[in-house]
Length: 542
Image (cartoon, rainbow, N blue to C red; front, top):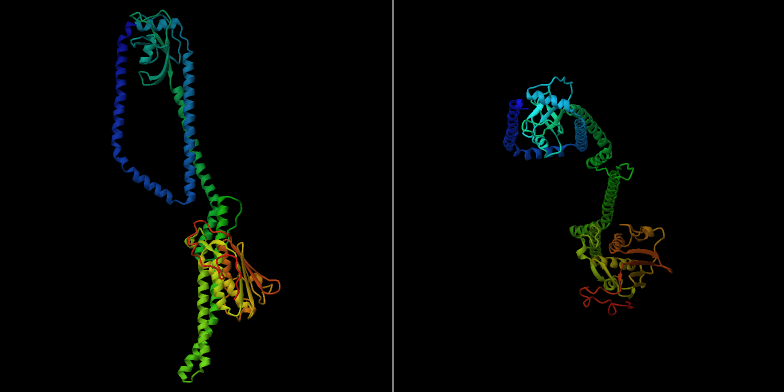
């Protein structure tokens, strides 16, 4: 093999140039990286701008875009995995075919003799493989008709006996990528120094790269078609899925434009869109009912205000005409007119107060009015209301049997409700009659002996401004029992009216509570006492 020293030296020079090439490429890569640093500083602004543009897109466009991106990502991962697996399998098959190639001793002797300058009279058969001998020093002897492949360190290690075999990819003298399988040579041939040799079998890598390039093109086309199909399907799905949202949007815009609360959205199914549609229908129904109640309240309030205002204007006109004409009104008539004016003003003040109470939003212990709700003694409130009722009905006898009961409520609202119940009983009781008040186990019963309530009118007694035809001549606005019902509901209780056996009306107000106050109830010792003695069971009359 001494005759090939010059050629091997050339190969070694080629190795040195190849070794320097990676450093040059690496330097170029670093330069490119450093040169791109200035552009990186502007990327966050561009990324933020792109994100803003994305959020400005319609929802269906965003869904379609996200679907396309997700499918593209999945397809790209699948394609990359398919390409890598195929590359490994093809490379493994090529390695297997190289490792199974058997080179006979005569062929090796002919190659060695040719490289030593004394060729044997041997005719080489054409073969797709490149066969070459490798010495531990890195010199190679290549089969005729093939380009030499520079020896790698792994090949030298196999020739030197440090490795049992080596498989790698490198380039031959023409730059063609070759897959090389090197194994120890067990024959009698050695190099000029007597060192054992290794034999390398190589084949072009185009057996692997050509199918891979074709596969990459196919995967690219399939991925592109898949992404376009996914984007189209995503846009179609987004349009179909957002149709209920479009209907809901159109309904909301219609309500905002026309204030028409009668519109309803058809709902079917149990998905989120159906639930949203049902919630919207419930909201518009509640708003419509609230607006109807508001309009009814305004109409009823105007009707109720008209009567006292007309009476006031009439009385004031009489007084003004008397003063202007000089014709004096008799003192008794004038006093009656002033008393009527005063009564009408009081009625107006009471009506306005009732309207203010009913116009307040509902308050619960967990709502905005939670600070005004506390534990109060219901028997004390009933006792205080009885004193006021006795002043309004001096000819009546009011009896009371009050057992201690503590409730959680707003004191002022609860006292107003109890006063309204007692006033209602006083108003309809005949002169010299009796009103019986009893409080036991959280049930407050107020019984009068008046004419009672017609059965047809009982379902309407708690409606706002409703007044029985028989009671329209009596003072009142028709809001008292509405306030009672509202206060009882806020306190967690209830109220009802019924005709009592033997005549009269019986009102029953029930409130949840306890017969003993909580330990931390403030001001227990200073609570006002019920008429007739300390808070507790009592019988009083007046």
